[in-house]
Length: 160
Image (cartoon, rainbow, N blue to C red; front, side, top):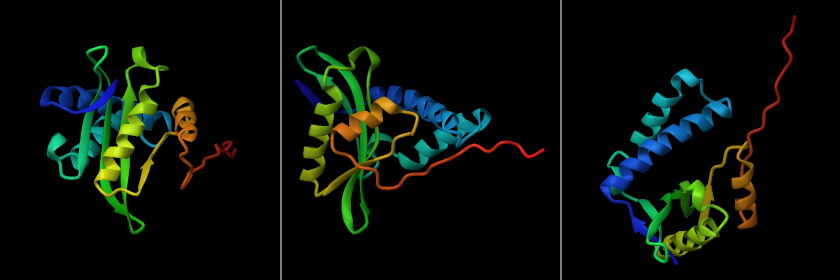
């Protein structure tokens, strides 16, 4: 049975170190940042978004805990914010460890997230996904998420 456990200071540091690196890599792969600047920009964004760590107001940082297996299997971070006249739960990060994937943890985590956020007045859940992350996009679409805004790009051939 999966449950949301607030991150401890130790688990938050592990989450932060891993997430800064993976977010930097995602931004490089998507062409938004150069490899040289990515780590520093990623760390700065996390510092801006979570200046008080897991105690930052309106932010919820959880370890995904499987009580049956007595282990953490992933992480979830979302923030309650006002957007378009409604309170939404914006998911900044959800990740199930590679060795725990394809077992329904992500779907169950979203169910728990929706309940947790609704109890706090949220009327919708939003998230961002990189275009190249096809497995995550398929999961989100399967959960009923729909695109709200899409940025598209087409590479140009050099002019000679």
